[in-house]
Image 1 (tube, rainbow, N blue to C red):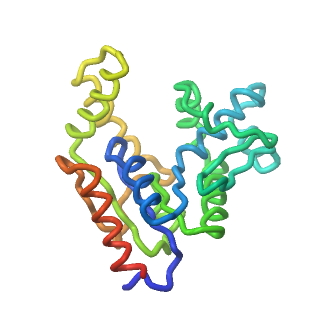
Image 2 (cartoon, rainbow, N blue to C red):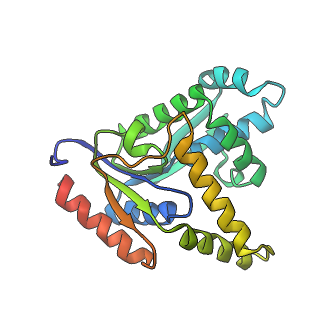
Length: 226
């Protein structure tokens, strides 16, 4: 079925390390779309929990989410996160925040909140969104769905190179083990597991440069959505 007439959304799912963020941000830039990383929404929730609501347990915090002064908006074409009117994007990359975000993402109310944020943004502008369930749960009516993947070895190598470049001493075998375990956890979890949508186009990025992948997605968009 053609994507013409469907929601002007390019939804991209895939396992950790498949290149989703790098590729999607460039696709969005090329097309003049808004790029949404679903992970940044979960990290924003984590930031608020750790910095403001740390006295609550996770379940109670999840129930309070909709009343918290956390805003997600578009500023000069970019996705911004604000708390009480202050932009906090630059504070969302602390490892503690990422760890807590992973726990929060397992809670139904938090996932529903994140999904509502993404849908509200897509109602304002065309978007490229990446995640684990963007094609299956959040945007099942996206005009283009892509499942981005790569071999576990390739994804582990990318992560290992990133860490080495930052001066973090770590064995490749350890990273590979983490990648395999993360894949299993993402695919087998009961809430919004990582699965390929039946109508998603699979792109294996193993051994392929970012530019080639970006061009392929842009061309697919032009074929299916315009």
